[in-house]
Amino acid sequence: MDSSPLATIVDHHSSDCLSLGQSSSPSFPYYNDWKFQFPSDLKPKICITTSTSAGLEQILPWMFYHKVIGVGTFFLFVEGKAATPSVSKVLESIPGVKVIYRTKELEEKQANSRIWNETWLSSFFYKPCNYELFVKQSLNMEMAILMARNSGMDWILHLDTDELIHPAGGGEYSLRKLLHDIPCDVDMVVFPNYESSVERDDIKDPFTEVSMFKRNYDHLPKDTYFGMYKESTRGNPNYFLTYGNGKSIARVQDHLRPNGAHRWHNYMKTPNCKTLFLTPKAFIVASTATEEEKLNWYREHVVWTDKTINLKLLRKGILTRIYAPSVIIEGLKESGVFTSIIAKAPTTLSRDKFLASIESSNSSRESGAHSHPSRKIGRITEHHSFFYKPCNYELFVKQSLNMEMAILMARNSGMDWILHLDTDELIHPAGGGEYSLRKLLHDIPRDVDMVVFPNYESSVERDDIKYPFTELCNRLK
Image (cartoon, rainbow, N blue to C red; front, side, top):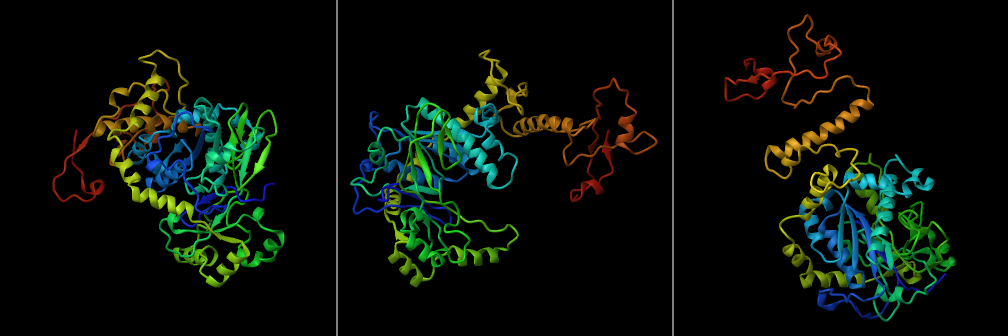
């Protein structure tokens, strides 16, 4: 194991940052006046893959920081806020960025992938909390490997958008230079993580406001680690609040596969591994805690407010100061890179074309190509003419897709009849001895597949109706 500080990952969750390594006045070879116009022949080619639901306020500083240190390609598996049009249109406009949406087609591809049947991964299926994220990240990492190979990448790294690599220790502040000097027989490089140690409870921008980090125990003398364990953990059960096993970057090669979110492996051999540096993230508080209890726990276990203890741990080397990431990101902000990227993003989103192409390929109307249909939406092809139209057309498509999914759930639940009804509509099963929809359907002949209920329209008699279900009795036939 290499004990010299070479690189680090800085993790900046809303409470944590992650980083390692030391350097004095490093140079930034890929600064390029913030234009990031990398020569096409620049080697090695590095890509980062991530699964994120974050917004631009986190993703852009994270991405362009890594561009500064030599990363040219990003595979972003987005959902939540990251998949909204206002965010994804900006991400798609950035050179070297591939945005992958969590569509039903993606889920089907992953369900048919090799890793899906791996016993080590399947044991995490259908479990709550971070297990679901773990499975999703592993599946996305496997797909990112294929994209990395097709794009001619040399190295691939899985990194969360609240983590930063800190490639200190050399003449250049460069991940590309660091990896260029790795021996050819090394398949994977492990970056032990440093955990951010926030000094206030009102941190808004961890990337620029946090400079103090707790060193990974792999980078500490054993007597220091054990001798200062109580002071450095402050009553927490573990040395780090979250993980301490670092993350790794792998050489893109045949048979590469993910081994969880922190490691890579190979189907055909045991990778030759070299350990360097890295950093972790957040904390977990019981969901039953009140906001005040959460804040008190946060202040007690996460925020480092005791300056005497901080200074003691800094002198012992357990805590360290790292400024390079915040300096770079502040420089990026001041240069106007982020605002420029947002302003130049197209007003229309290619995601629409992407989703439309999925529906088109499923229907095979134009090309006649055979595609693997989605389990959930693959057969809803007759509604293509209503896609991307305003007003009720969007609702019509959404209802149709939801209804098809409801059919599957109804069959799995052993239902006999299914009815689609809006929440401002009521069924009125009159005309029989019982006021019962169940009795009405029970008496329907078995060869009848569908029953149509002609609608009556309400006719309001006042303009101050507040409870239509109870205040209306007149209906148009």
